Every structure is written in structure tokens, then in C-alpha cells.
Image 1 (cartoon, rainbow, N blue to C red):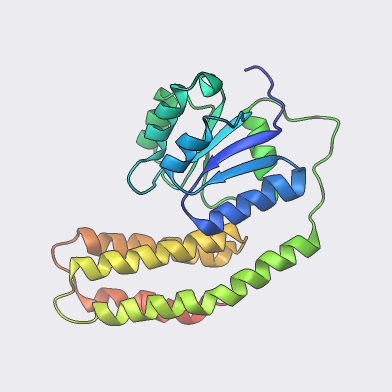
Image 2: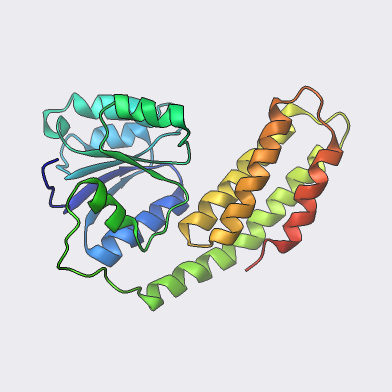
Length: 236
């Protein structure tokens, strides 16, 4: 693949925590200009007058998903040949084959490490510089990220506890489980964006358990006990 000098990125992502993490990883650490778009429609509009060296796209978004956004961007002559990378938690074998069929340069799984995101992108694009060492971590910026997450964590946990309480009634409603699933996913995204991989991994396990409840015809509140017990350990 032709080497690409990454100077500007068009980033389409609806999650605010992931937006902040990517800004930190690319703009703050590497002075790469990041045009952040919070929706697919916003991304397609921005592409009309923003020439990017890279398209960085979330896959799962409301209304219009990442692959559809990519197809729309390819209709614009400016971005017909711009390398694209998907940033997503959907990385099963079938998912990866599908992304490959769309002609993306690569896929970076969520959760990701903000400190190494630029290097992973550079490696995908084939431009990893051998003579230049990776920049050292920046303690001040990292400390800010950790303090922001610490402030948000109690609020997110309280919402999850409230959703768990709603799920305790028998029979457990699919809608209530789906709401719990969304809140845990939000916590996982925030934890991974701010670099707390312990909570991110725990939330991912909880997501899988709740997902099985959403899909199961025989849901019981007893199945939620393990998640509720784990909540006490989801702290900084």
C-alpha cells in the first residue's frame, strides 16, 4: 500500500467518550488534525469540504451505520481513494470478512489503547517510521482523562443499578434487559476510552451475560445476581 502522511482524519463516531479518546490519541499526542462528526449525516456533510488523509469510522451508529457512511463517502471524489479504517467492537470472523469486502485498509478493535492508537493506524497504512521512537506517555493529559472518568463512574454505576432493579421483577422483560445492556455498553465504551481496561473487560463480560438474557425466551432475575455482585468491584 502507498504510504500516507497522516495529517488530518475524518472521524465519525456517536460516542462522546470515544471521541475524546481519539482526539487525545491523535490530536494531542501527535498533532494530527481530527474532524469529529457525531453522526453519519454530519460525517457525510463534513466530507464535502474537508480533505482527510484517513477516514476513521465507527461501525454501529444510529440510523446509518459505518459501512453505509463509507459507501456515501466514496461517492465524493475527494474521498474516493482515501484509506478507511473501522473502529469497532464487532470483530468476529464474519465481521472482518465483511469489512474486507468493503475495501477498508484495516480494523482496530474496541477497546483500544489511546497511547498506541496512532502507531496501530500507521502500521495498518504501512507507514510505521523505523527511525522515530514512539512518543512517551504524557502524564498530565492521562491524569486528566482518569479524573474525568472517576467523576463519571459513580453516575454510570448508579444508572446500571437502577436498571438492574427494574429487571428484578418476574418475568424479566426483554425491554428492561436491553436497557441494562445499553448502560453497560456505555460504561465499557467510557472505560476503554479513558484507559481503564479492568473495568472495560468486566463490563464486556457483563454485556455478554445480559445479551444472552435479551435473546433467551426464559429470563430470570436470578441470572442477574452475578452482575449485581460484580458492581461493587467496578471502582477505580
